[in-house]
Image 1 (cartoon, rainbow, N blue to C red):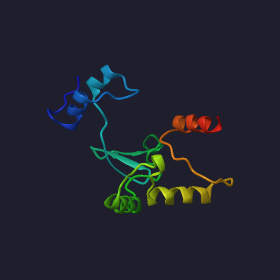
Image 2 (spheres, rainbow, N blue to C red):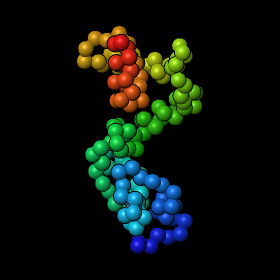
Image 3 (cartoon, helix red, strand yellow):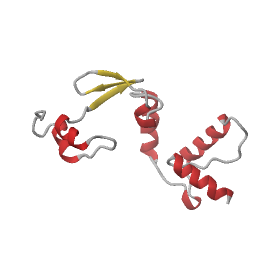
Image 4 (cartoon, helix red, strand yellow):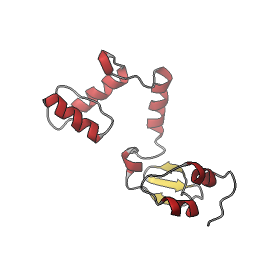
Length: 131
């Protein structure tokens, strides 16, 4: 078994996190690779080793890592409202701006955007709209 320093992030991870698609028993022995920072398409672990990230952190960082412009826009938006749903006729300007932008760059003319959280949710909603 690899020795993990007590109360280190590695030991805390092994004690408390169950990782999807990870061999749990091997993880108990080896511990995690902890990523600490990123810049563009490069991500660095806590030991400073650099990796080229080819999956956009499982499709959640398609604009790369350490993006100052994105951080500034997120900060400014979160200062005002951060998030609010668009259910039951509620709306907010960031959602409206995003939908207008998506309509302007859509490859075919469209009249509306329906925002969803995942591909399966989008497919489910599309089928329900057709019905």
